[in-house]
Length: 443
Image (tube, rainbow, N blue to C red; front, side, top):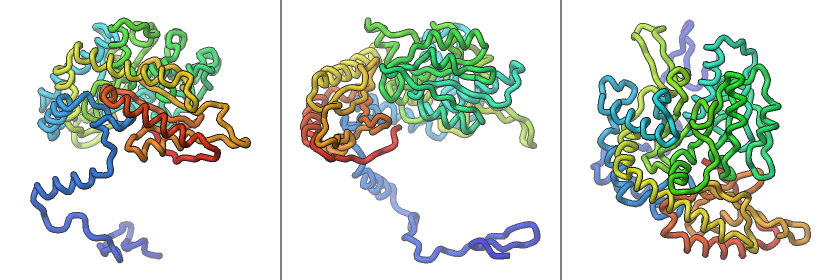
């Protein structure tokens, strides 16, 4: 029998003999270094990263200014080593966690029955959403041979991950011309194996809020879950409404909505790894959890996919919430919303660019005008992203249709004039025939 690398067959077991690889790169660890040297090297590695703290990124990272960032980072540092797997050992984490969840539930109009857990962010929340839907159906005695979920093509990709993990068919339904979910078509796609309906508030790709009430009503009638992905809007939409704007119904005030995902590391301005999955009641919340005693180590339970997890995100979320308060979040939301609307107004009648949809919150999707053709060759909007990148800006690229995407947050007010100037100059340059740009995976 041939050896596999350094594996040597011995009876029913394989022993592994260490052999250093040929022509290996220089070892990463090497001799130990002083902390100052290590930190200096870290800063050197950061040299090519986008300057998101200065407002140069319209994706991936969010900033409410240096004071909030410093507080978030210090709170994270102080609790980074505490393990949120077992909050009995760390009652400080339990108290902070409960405070954070209670605050978020107040944003989404929860009541005495609603409940939730913090997660590592939107992806974990959405994966658990799929699991919870399957578990509820099983718990209530439904026979599932091929469970499915019905969702618009704009719903976040992490739901596909959940479907893949838990063996759920994903039934993607085309959206309407205004990029909102086609609720009538979604309702037609439901059958006796459907366990989950999904809408977004707002959807990531085009930044519009889906028509949630008809989906939730049908879910309630069929006793299946209806999830609202508000990872992008769970903080912004409540404060927009408090500020006097009209917001389409989407939260727990809508009968039939069973769960809502909210990301605090986005518009909550907490450290990365801070998300929430909120449920209509504790029975539904229990469907996302895992508990077993089927081993020799006693009872093991966790609220999410992760077991051991740092207390840092909990402490960061708690500290930032406590520091900002309602007044701070209102100010930051007003700033981000004003900047988003300023960009939208700037693009009205633009000679090169056009909005895919008017933003319902702070997300903008931008394409090129349809009449920009030269000898039947159309320019490429990704070339605009390349031109912006050359000037130090980072924007998402998405498709279909090919578009650039802006996630506008509070930090952008200070750089808005510069960004719009560069956007105009770059778009004018690349609008010629045959321009092409690269492609990147969205967050």
